[in-house]
Amino acid sequence: MYLHNAPDGIDKPKSKKRLTPTEALTKIQRYCAYQERSHKEVKTKLFEYGLYANQVDDLISQLITDGFLNEQRFAKAYAGGKFRMKKWGRLKIKNELEFLGLTKNCIRQGLKELDDADYIKTLKSIVVKKAGAVADENIFSKRDKVARYAIGKGYEPELVWGLVKELFPD
Image 1 (cartoon, rainbow, N blue to C red):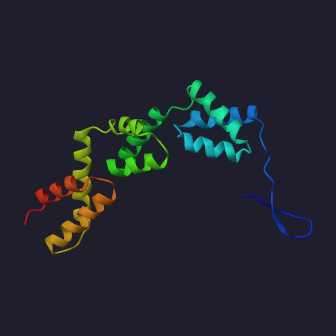
Image 2: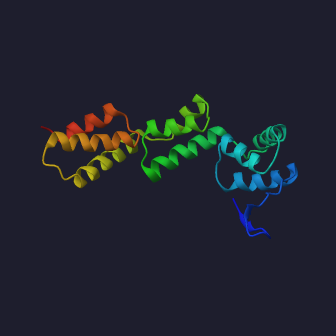
Image 3: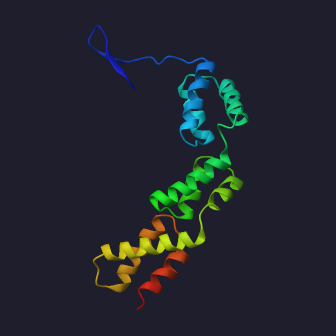
């Protein structure tokens, strides 16, 4: 919220200019062209521009028709990006995509972007790196801390525990 000094010395919020649907379309097209966006993000942004619900629905339909918005494309970009950059696991990515309101089919398509060999390789590197950082003499406590960390990043518990037990046998 932007504030400015009122004549009486009291800060009051500046009123935002309400955009016309044409102005909003131009602005939202740039917003969508910059990076893939979910329908929820775009809808929120359009409401911030001061548009009414029917105008927002019309603009979203137009953005889909013009190819600026595509949930499946967004799911693929999001899943691939979060896996490569933040090393998130499938469960965390799935939960975030559900939170963004994507359909189960789009989520499934997005998760197909994750190559199984890369997924296991990344999980292994996370486990090994975390194990090196955990200074605990008790092997069971160390295993637990490492596994909790990997599970917290969204990797499947059975996969994590299998790998942890394989790398750090009794």
